[in-house]
Length: 134
Image (cartoon, rainbow, N blue to C red; front, side, top):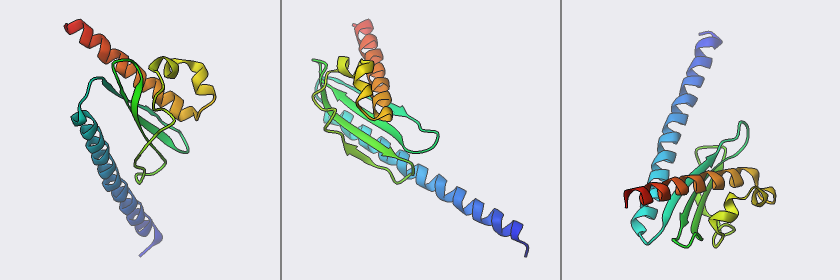
């Protein structure tokens, strides 16, 4: 047996492992998002992401109260499918206007700042849709 079939077998096994890992990571994401939305309360939920070409990407889920303050923030940061959501206390209590501001991003991790702005954009769209249906 040559080395080509062995190499293809190894690549196929790694590819299959990535597919399985991605499935479990997406399942975890859905479970966390479902739990947050079921907790209820007044406000909005937004999710944002920042992909890194090389290195760690960030997914951020923000729960924002009616007054515009972040009530809860969960961050998943990592380069593999083993990353899980963790509380992000540095974002709790901030106003969404602060997160929208480019200057806020200067003092923070670039990926987190971008993911926060994207989550705020999603919350803004949800608010606009809600006002349009009233």
